[in-house]
Image 1 (cartoon, rainbow, N blue to C red):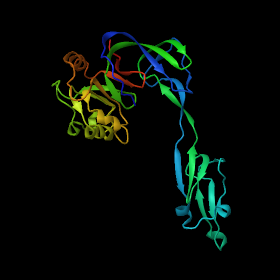
Image 2 (cartoon, rainbow, N blue to C red; image 1 turned 90 degrees about the horizontal axis):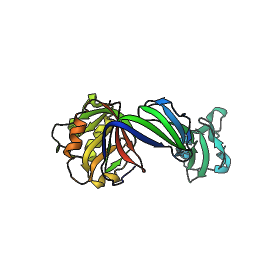
Image 3 (cartoon, helix red, strand yellow; image 1 turned 120 degrees about the horizontal axis):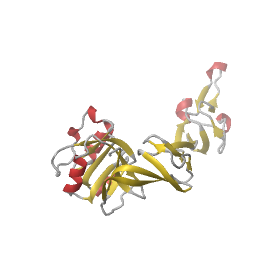
Image 4 (tube, one colour; image 1 turned 30 degrees about the vertical axis):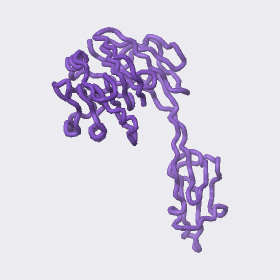
Length: 277
C-alpha cells in the first residue's frame, strides 16, 4: 500500500518511460527490445508464505492430546498436503482418527491443541502492466518500458496495481462515487469520478470485480481499512474532500473507454494510460 503525497504531474499523448521494480528476491526474465502487453511477465518474485493453524484436537475428536503418542511430524520438518500430522489409534484397527496437513510447507510450532504450518514460498510472475517496448534493464530488478500514452501522477493511493478500461462515473467534476453507482457491467473497469469515495463504495467495487478507482480525494482514514482494499484507489488531489482539478478531469473524460493502468507502489503513486495514440 502506498500513501505518498506528491506534486501532481500530467504528460499528455506522448512517449513516456515506465519504471517497473521487482520486489527483493525478484528475477528479470524479459530482454531489451521486447514488446510487452499488460500481462507479459517481465520477471518473477517470491510469494511470501502464509501461516496456517491446524486444529488437531478437532480433527481427532478429542480434548486430550498426548503429543508424544500421536504426532507423526516434528517441528522444523517439511510437510506435504494430505500427509498425516497426527494419528489417534482406536481400540479396533479401523477405528483410528487422522489429522492431515491441509497445505504443503513446514511445521513451525506446536501449541496446546494446534499445529502451525508455514506454507512454501513460491515464485510468482510479475506482469509488465502496460503496452510498450523494453528500453533498458538498469538494475537486477528494474525494467524501463517505453509507452505511448498519457500519464497522470496522483497525490496519494492505496491498493495494488491493476489494468482496466476507463469509465467515467459522472459528467460532474465534483461528484463522488457511491455504492449504488456500480453494476455488473463495470467489471474490469477503472471507475473515474471527480469527487471522493468512501469505504462502502470501495467494498462494493471489489464485490463486482471493478479493476480500480480514480477520484479527486479520499479520507485518510481509508488507509486503515481492515482488511486492506484488494483494488487500487488513487486520488489526484490528496486526502480530504477536494474535487479533481478540472484539467485532469477533462483529460480523463476525453479518454473514456480507453485502456489504462493504475500503478501503485511505495516508490511511485501514478495513473498511467496505455494504448492511447
